[in-house]
Image (cartoon, rainbow, N blue to C red):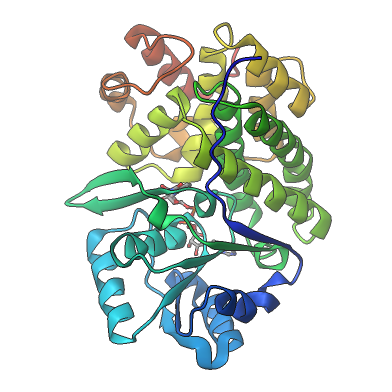
Length: 352
Ligand code: NAD
C-alpha cells in the first residue's frame, strides 16, 4: 500500500430529515449565546425561520451573501456582527453563504454552524475565498472550518433540478480528483467511491422527481462525502481549470465544474488508471470520462462551455492561465493538450 498521512480536520456532522430542529441545541453545544444568521437575499426566509428557532439566542439575520464573497460584503457583515455582539454564525445556504461565514470567521475566529442547502461542499473545508478589486484570493485556515454542520434534507427540496444537477456534479468533481490526489489516502478513496455512487444513482431521480426524499438524502450524503474529500486532499487540473474559467470569464461555478469534469477525467485517463477504474465502477460504467459525460446529459445539464457564457476567443487565454503555476496533476500539464481539452469542452463533444 502507498504510504499516507491521514489528518482529518474534525467537524461535528448532524445528518437527516428535519435536523434543523436541533439548531438551538447545537449553538448551545458550542457554548455560544448570540448567533448571527447569514444567507443570500433569495434565502432570507430560511434564515428568518432559523432565527426564530434560535429565539433569544438569535442576534439577527444578515441576508446579503453573494457569489465569490466581495470584500465589501465581508467587511459589512463583520461590522454588523460586532454591532450585534454576535459570538457565533449560522450560515444557511450554499457555498456563497458558507463563504461569507468563513470570511467573517477568518478575522474574528468565532465558530460557524453551517447549514448547507446545495451540494458544493464548502462547509467541510478549511478553504476560504475573498474577492478584492475583481480578484478572488483563496487560502486555507483551520479557523474558517465550520465547527458543526447540520445537513437537513428538507432544506434541499427547494433546490430546483436545474441547480441540483450541476451542484451534484460539482461534488462529484471533488471525489473524482480525490481518487488520484497526490496526497490521497485509503479513507478518502472509500469516501470518494461511496459519494460518487450516491450521486450517480440519485441525481437522475431528483431531476425527474424533485420531491423524492430518498434521492435527496442520497445526494446530500454524497455532497457531504464530496466536501470531506475536498477538505482533506489536494485537487488537480480539473479544479485549476474551473478556478481559471470561473474567475477570469465569470462562468457559473457549478456549471463550469459540470462541463469540464468529463474532459479533465479523460486528460488523466492513462496517467491514473487505478483511480479511473474506481470511478468507473462507482458510476456503473466502463470509462469514467464517458460515464460522467453521459450522466450530465441524463440530468439535462449543460455539457458545453459555449452554452454557459464562455467566449470562443477566450480559449487561448484560458489555456495560458490554466498552465501557469499549475497544481500537481497525475499527467504533466501540456499547453497544447490543455488547449485541445478546452476546445472539446467548448463544443461539448463526448470524450472518445
Ligand atoms: P450558491 O451558494 O451561490 O447558491 C446559488 C443560488 O441558489 C443562491 O441564490 C442560493 O441562495 C440558492 N440556493 C441555495 N440553496 C437553495 C435551496 N435549497 N433552495 C433554493 N435556492 C437555493 O451556489 P454554490 O454552488 O453552493 O456555491 C458556489 C460558491 O461556493 C462559489 O463562490 C465557490 O467558489 C464556493 N465554493 C467554495 C468551496 C470551498 O471549499 N471554499 C467549495 C465549493 C464551492
